[in-house]
Image 1 (cartoon, one colour):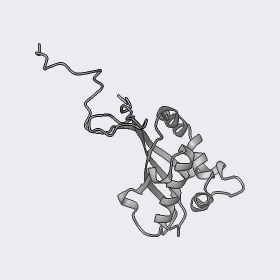
Image 2 (cartoon, rainbow, N blue to C red):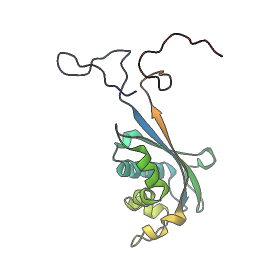
Image 3 (cartoon, rainbow, N blue to C red):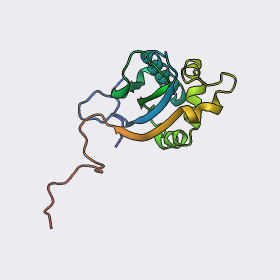
Length: 168
């Protein structure tokens, strides 16, 4: 339920096994990029993670970009679609729904590509006007929000749960 831990004498949250950490959410995106030939895949994935970290205002360490199994070659031979899974741990209290809307409307997708000269180049976009080609080079397959909890917490149960209730 995202209640912060009680504070200790120094005003810091107490460390206790049963206190819940404030809720955070993971944005899970499946995105297909039309990548130019000769692009180094690990470099490309690093650029994807960095660009999304910038768009979502989170540290790069909280963003993970991985290529789907079908496209795990070191260098890409010809211009081909590369399916990328991007997972980003959103900052506490961020409105995940707003990000989902931004991504589905392509605003955040365009922003993520245009902000990265490496991606503009890797996707073969016109550096003078990269935004114009983003729609043809990048497609979002799915965007989901996954809540992150501090431990094995059951569903939304307000307060202490009573004993077992007899079924009908």
